[in-house]
Every structure is written in structure tokens, then in C-alpha cells.
Image 1 (cartoon, helix red, strand yellow):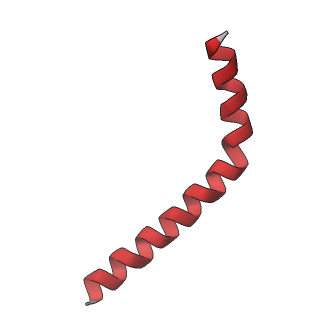
Image 2 (cartoon, one colour):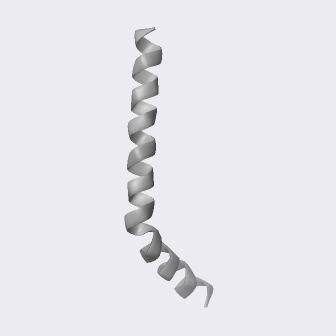
Amino acid sequence: IYVMEHEYYSGLSLGIMAIIAVKKLGPVIAKWADGEID
């Protein structure tokens, strides 16, 4: 049970960090990707 809880919370925090990263870095990555395509 402890392991499942630990996995759940680590996955949850990782997901939240990923969402924050996408919100902050999304426009920068999109701009870079557009430059790469051109």
C-alpha cells in the first residue's frame, strides 16, 4: 500500500510539474519548432 501511495503521489507531482513546464515553456518551444520548420 505504501509503495502504491508513493508511486501515486510521485506521479501526481510529476504530472503537475509537467503541466507547469508546458504552460511556461510551451510558447518558447512552439516558436523554436516554427523556426526549425522554416
